[in-house]
Image (cartoon, rainbow, N blue to C red; front, side, top):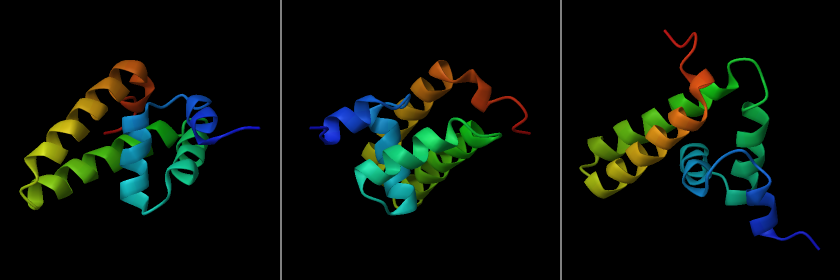
Length: 91
C-alpha cells in the first residue's frame, strides 16, 4: 500500500519545497506534492513554484517571522540549485 511518504518521495521536490507549496496554496501535504509535481512538468511551471516560495518568504518577512523566512530561503536556494530551469524566462 502506498503511504504519504511514498507519495512525497515520488516527486522531484523536497519536503521543504512541498511544504512551501502547501502553505502558499492552503493545501494538505499530499495535494501540494501532486500540484508541485504537475507544475514541474508544464511550461513555466517551475517558475510558478519559485514564485510561490518567494511570495511565502515575503509573507514571512512581512509578519516578522524570520525563522520561517530563513527556512523558506533555504528551500528556495536548494530548489534553484536543483531546478535551474525555474530561472529561465522569469524576467
